[in-house]
Image 1: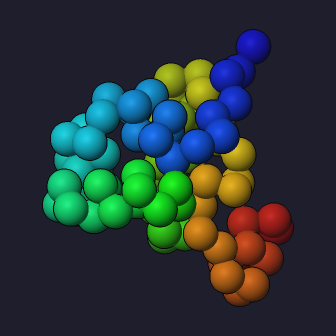
Image 2 (image 1 turned 120 degrees about the vertical axis):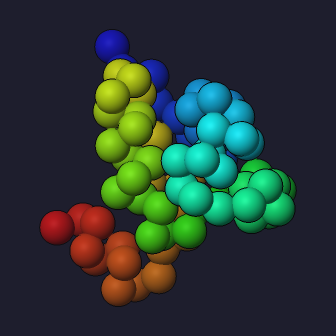
Length: 77
């Protein structure tokens, strides 16, 4: 059974923590800390993060990402 992640903090922790997310997405620790505090990942991180989650047998609710109408429609297709 795939574990469904529902918060940004849980997602970051499940993928190895702040440093691991920094390395995976090529961003600084400040960005990841901001995402954790605001409980949302930017929509552009979806493909990379989703791929990594799948490798680990995990999934995350779409609410973990910050979608605008355009990116939400693309994710639903």
